[in-house]
Image 1 (cartoon, rainbow, N blue to C red):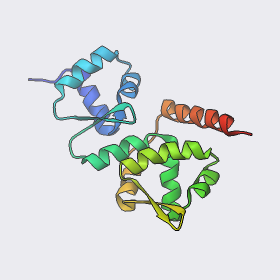
Image 2 (image 1 turned 120 degrees about the vertical axis):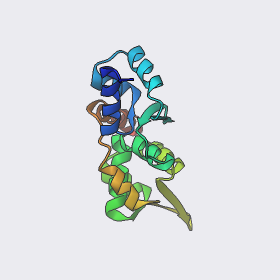
Image 3 (image 1 turned 135 degrees about the horizontal axis):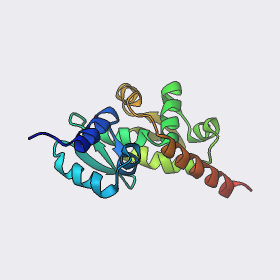
Image 4 (image 1 turned 135 degrees about the vertical axis):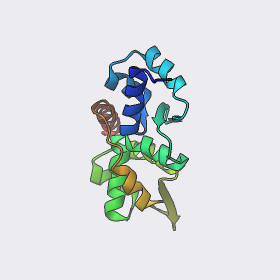
Amino acid sequence: MRMSETRQRIRDHIERDPGVHFRELTRALDLGTGQVQYHLRRLDDLTAESVSGRKHYYPPGYDPWERRTLALLRRETARDVIVTLLERETARPGTVADHLGIARSTLEHHLDGLVECGVVEKRRDAGRVTLSLCRPVETTRLLRTAEPTLSERLTDRFERLVDGLLEEP
């Protein structure tokens, strides 16, 4: 049985952009939500996973850690945290927040997801917290795969702005 053109477009997009979330998929392909839902149900070899309240889609071949990491890499701030830790290997949270110019609460929000998914490790030693990547080589490989879209970057920047305003004295 031949795959419909719409279904093939959805599959191709997910293969090119693994970890794309549902809303971005509908926007990128200019399709209705019901239409995308219908075709996704029929693409039974794809994997769907909810990460941080968003459903993301993956072609075959990604393990659970890779799927969660790809989803988190779509968040500009989480991505910036990861790049900072790749550059420095280890860093204290305050140093990362200062380097990125974000509020500590914004950093902690993103660290919660990164730690929970096994991307970042928080070590406590004598009352000091140090951050490092759990799997730097694999994370670097995935970093090249996932690029935040404009709408994802704008959402993250809005969160940074609001958090910064809330933390000002």
